[in-house]
Image 1 (spheres, helix red, strand yellow):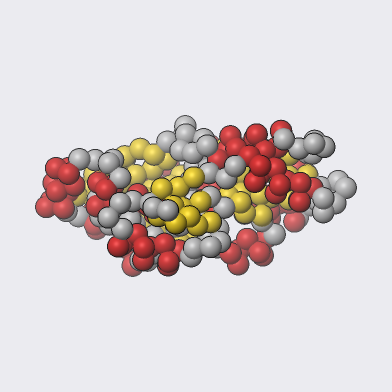
Image 2 (spheres, rainbow, N blue to C red; image 1 turned 90 degrees about the vertical axis):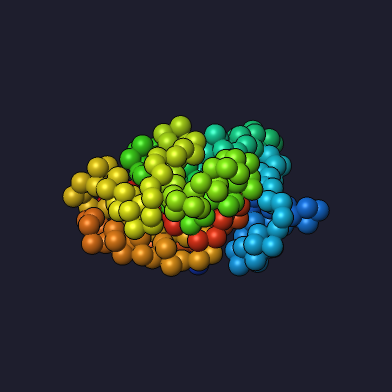
Length: 284
């Protein structure tokens, strides 16, 4: 059996050391501040991005990798071994054209390769946990079919919730009106967001007060997983205080067997703003 290579994109928010540890290939999206274009997580760091975001009067925009960029990545990876195969896991097709670019890129190859492109129906470490699990299974010698089946099952079973520190960036992005942003700031409303089974961002609840909002998230996880053993990743956008407090609360109430940490990058951070917290959970 040949080598199985895992490829994802920069929105998976897998820390560089983890990508290197698991030999995961990453194709970057682009971040545009006016006329300045950067490769996400390559030519702009998270710290640099959030520093610019704090000063920006207009939100940056993002763009997906082109099919040619995916084709070139696939060609390079396939050239590493005669029997190399690829599992390519990407940002929800409901949020971006990245998945479609990956599919088109695989079809551009002059010599077809063994490539499976998967729509994660998720974002941030909702993608990352799939890619890392796939890489772990590949390193353990599992078959490609077993890895794809496991990833597809995880897509159905994993859960994630985001807690925003501020509504300012949603308002800047035109997601809610100015009146709603003002209403939220006056009454200390904290929106809780998730990504549904179709891969779309949706509001789960709006809770008054951070403490109550954090407990609401834990209660939602309790409903989903009960006392089942779980793996948890805690994520944040630039400031980690809220995220670490949320993670500590979860540790006291959920059956957590392992914990990872990650900083959420520019694509999600554009609309979430600094200080957002997220928990990504899947069964062991």
